Image (tube, rainbow, N blue to C red; front, top):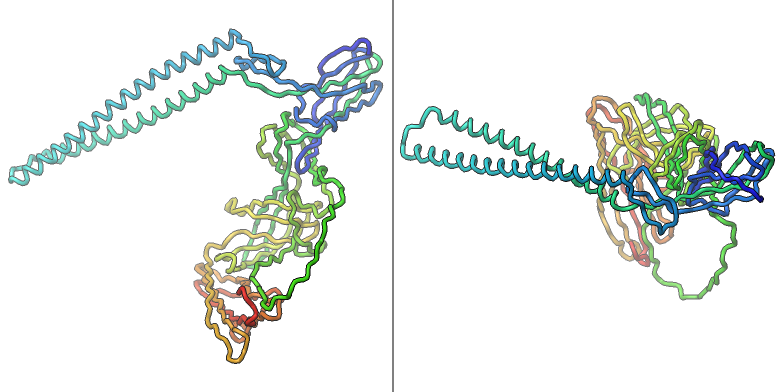
Length: 540
């Protein structure tokens, strides 16, 4: 390209695909060549753009010869409306406008200092007046006490004089408080002025980047330019909002689920009126074989004692089944997509400034019928909670993330949601019921060792009390738990005769009751189990 014409061109951001820890930016625009060879500069792209991901394509009569990213440091002058561009080591110019602004701020600061001095002087006078009034009041009360002690007659205007002195003290105290408030405001204004003066006194540096594209083609030719690159400093996470309506005594309700994409980005370029695509693809995960390590086996003598310990085992799934089978909850550092890449497209264009703050973009919503019930798990919380069960009627899965809970009274709390496939049922908790109370007690009733036996029995009682403080009848589903043993030398037995309603635990040790609470009524639930351990067992 013997002769190259240089000019700036506008190629706006058209689409941004957000990943877990980065973003794929696509710019599109039309360019008309003014000469056979032309160098086009696209200004103010993200300085953190990865050079090796840069791709520039031209469709039409022109072709792309070369493309590169030029980065530079911009030194901002003391005049906020001017800037000097160049290397990072260049200094800042002065400028008469900046000097005038600095002089105006200095004059404003001097006037403010005078006002602060006057306010402090006025406050000092008020403080002395308050001390004088206190002293006068103390002397007056002392004289009155002496007159009473000596039997002197008390003037009839004494109460009026005392009331007048008290009113004067109250008025002075109010003026003193107002003066202190004005002084604090003036001091805050002085600090703001000092910060503005300090900002004008020093130059600020900013990193900027431009994209240079060399185009070749006949003069007057038109072409469509598409630029894409990957930038770090951007991420997204799913965020849901659930609204519950019409939760009556029959349990029927309507639940509306709305899904947002919460976006953070600090890439150095603002995304204005762009199309957003939210993807769960993990581009940073490479395919590499695992490292092989030596697995050394050693023979050791078997211990005669059995060392055991109690542990908490969570039994959770991401859903309740339905059109899609229930799936074990995954623990991933990013977004749980059940192993299949999901792409969610925002229905409208959005604007996300480069300031690192969260911005929520609506992705979709659906409404479904739900069934609600009151549940109590006293071991986890001493509360009776409202729980709803509903089906994912949306076309896309509900990704794991926080859920804002909204009822008729407004926002009532926040919970978490695991991955829920389309057509799968899931549950949501809506907080405690204010008129229901629950308490739980665990007591060791008896511990004995049988004669001529190597087994020890420990009898434990669990007692749950429920109370209804409201005027309506309530039905509560109560879940309690007894331990479950996994070894032969530790046995746990539950006597149904000593369990309320002869309830039996399931394979996971859960006992369940359905309790009917009358208005202002109460109910007690008991469960007794025996833990039998062999003498070889230690650790319990």
